[in-house]
Amino acid sequence: MDTWKFYDIAHREHMVCNPTSDDKLARLVGLPRLPAKAHVVDIACGKGEFLIRLAEAYRIRDWDRYEGLQWYATAEYAGCHSDDPDLPEILERVAKAKAAYLRWGRDTLGWAMYVFRQLATTAA
Image (cartoon, rainbow, N blue to C red; front, side):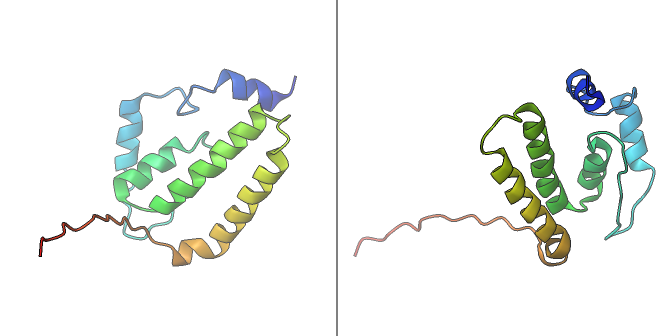
């Protein structure tokens, strides 16, 4: 059996691939005291849960989280649905979007929410 297949099956429900508690993880998030515009790298720590919690706590790299979750979800789907005839196209689209984001997106994208509403019409 493929080693990664085993881990995919056995660790699927783990948010953190480390036997730790939510309390310890929360304390760990508070330790770095990151300055504005800090850069953080999560290397082989599992599913990125610690990095996600840092981003939420320090409001850094919100767009990275949005993009990263798409990459993760696509990889998970590919691992579980290798027989999907659309998989090559899906992987190619995500790979192109990822390359473009990592090359240009981080420097140019911000985040905005737009709320639209229809104005009430006045009777004439």
